[in-house]
Length: 426
Image 1 (cartoon, helix red, strand yellow):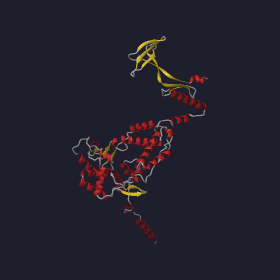
Image 2 (spheres, rainbow, N blue to C red; image 1 turned 135 degrees about the horizontal axis):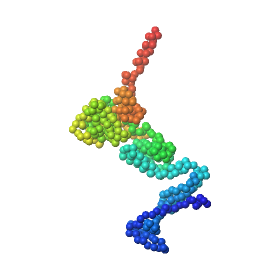
Image 3 (tube, rainbow, N blue to C red; image 1 turned 90 degrees about the vertical axis):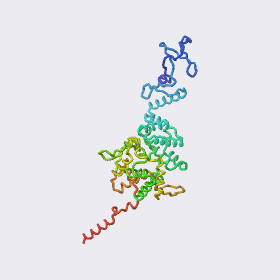
C-alpha cells in the first residue's frame, strides 16, 4: 500500500507571465486569464497571487520508489496519457524486479540498449565522422549503404542486428548490386559496428567484423604495375598528345600521390626553395586519412613542379589535372599499345584482372621502390601506409621475371659452395 502512495504519474505545474492580450475573468470565485492563441483557440488558465498564469506541462512525469529504496522522478517523454501509462507501468515493473533480485542493472541496461533506434545511431555516427574530419562524400556514401542494408533487412532498433541475417541479405544482392558495391557496403557496416562498440558503447562486440570479404572478386586487388618499357611508351605517347598530362603522369609515378591529391595541390603546399629537403606538405582535407602528410621530392619532380609554379600565386593550383583523366589515360594506353585490363569469363560472369588505371601509377611507384631494393619501412613511409603489410602485399606487384633476376639466383652460389667443399675435402 505504501508503494501505491509513492508511485504516481503526473504533469508538472508551471507558472508564466500573462499572455499578450489576455483578460482577467472570475468563475466560481476563481480568477482566470482568458486569451486567444495564434491558432484561434480560446484558452483559460488560473491566475495566482503574483498575477501569473498557472498551467500544466504537456509531458507526463513519473515518481516511483526505485530499486535502491529512494524516490525516482523521471520524464516519460510523451504527452499521450495512454503511452505514458504504459511507460510508467514498465518502469515500476523493472524497479520491482531489480529490487527482488530477478533482474540485474546490467540486464536492464542491455534491455534498454536493444530498444535504441538505429536511425538515431546512424545520425550520431555521421556527426562523429564529421568530428574526425572524414570526407563529406565518404560520410554520405557510408550512411546511404548502411541505411539501404537495414531497410532490406527491415531493422529498426539495435535488438534487430543479426550477423547471419545480414550475410543472407548481402548474398541476395548479388544480382542487383555489383561485387565492389557489396564489398564497400560490408566495410561500412564493419566500421559502423566498431563505432557502436568503441564510441556509442551500445554493443559489447562488433557483429559485422570481417563479415564478408571475397578477395578473389574484389577489383581493388586486381591492379597491376606498369613495366619500365610500358612506362616509357606511355610517357612518349602522352608527351606527343598533351605534354601537361605527361608531366602529371611523371609526378604520379615518382611521388605515389593519389589522383585527388595532385588535382588539389596548390603552390603554397610545395616547398622546393628552402634549405631543407624539397617536399610537398599535403593538407588534411586533401588527403585520404585527413591528417596531412609530407612527401619528399626527387630532383626530377622538383624541376617539373618549378616549371609549373613559375609566375603563380600561392593560392593557384600547381598543375591542371583534367576531371576525366581516367578516360584520357585509357586513350593513352591504347595509343601506346598497353593492355588496360585482362577480361576473364568465369561461370558466365566477366571479371577484370590486371587493371591499369590512374591508381595503378601509385602501385607502379611502390613496385619500383621494391625493385630498387628500398627497405620496406622506407617504402611504407613514402607510400604513407598505416602498416607495412599493405605496402608489401597489396601495392608491391612483382612478376615471375622480377623474381628470377640474377641477384636473386642461388643456384650458382650453391654450386660454388659444393665445389669448394669438395676441394676442401680432397
